[in-house]
Length: 242
Image (tube, rainbow, N blue to C red; front, side, top):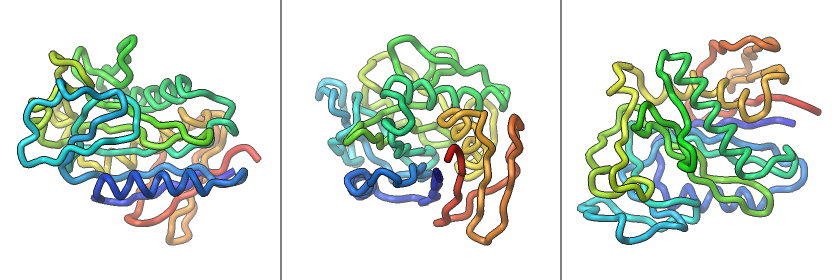
């Protein structure tokens, strides 16, 4: 079964959510899973569990109600989004295991950069010390996931001061730039992808990425590096299992 990875660039939030819903509703038994890498223009999003008390002053940044789980957060340029469209029934996992696998992929990626990242019990996401660097929010529909992960790379963190991020008034956020890492979202996506795929689907699977140009990059079983790049508006395929 293939996993298709799309690099969608900078795209508007509400339209992307609608596109994900359409994808999930149109799935059939043998539909490939997809991972979408992208960024959003500045936007606050309020999850299904969100409360107005956690939104203080949005200013000129729009606030959009979302169907994902969780509370309010901020998205903007310089934050890498990875939306995970996975058939959970086919993988034989539930939402909690999916969260664990996403977190593990991010932690493995950050650890390889020399960043000591960890989970916080009862607070989904990935943290460096007590500061949140990656937020998670998911929706399960017809047995499949959508929404996913937001990793702070070099975005402006000021808008987080206008909300209680993820519903926590005292929660501080950080970004790779503040950890001394001079890296952009494209480079992060290229490095994160094999870690995320490996965590989601298991390192026991050989990874075989095919670029739009027709070149094939093979990552042997057990190997942890992947020398590829994700071309804009292209598809890559990871074959595993049957």
